Length: 268
Image: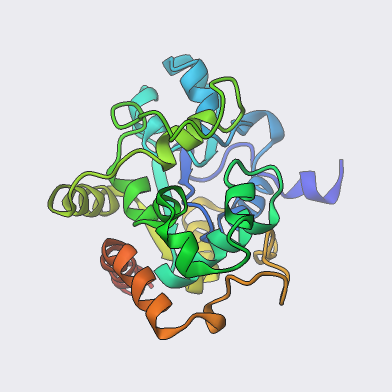
């Protein structure tokens, strides 16, 4: 048996099923790599996108697995026969938004890649585009405040229904409800999540979970990070006007992020 397999815990101290509620560009890929080290492969739900659960939305889809993680929004809460232990990470909204733009800018397989490339790094023009704007508009509030099943709509006809990202796009580009409805829903959901951390303190979150569940293993290694100097969408390059536009588009996310900071500090 390999050293990695030796570290995996088939029956953690707390055997309650764990769901990592992955919000894009919050260090979630790194956190998932860390979580996966502590579970046997057969106990991890292998899918990470909503398309998979949309194709088979039955309780038996997720029930056999001790670890569920991915961009699945509230689907596991609705599909599982018993509530899982939940974890999520939030990030300072401007850093999350620029990281998201940079990711799409360099990922040739992303459905919005060519559209974003068209603007050649001009963020002002890009944010005038309703599709690009929707991609960064209160994304963290979207992931916590919308329902995976009830709030889906045609995602601007970005992808064909059979596309692997169709489910994710339908969720990530569905129109947001008014702020007075969305923010309370997102805050209520955040208050119900068992472990809440921030990207800036992700190692602190990992240590809390490790202590509670008897995990062993190394510190979190960083994955899926942006290559330095490779994108025009970097926080340090934003003009004051561009910063203000992004702040307006992420106003609700700032409320959630500050709430996550408070939760994280209180739990130390």
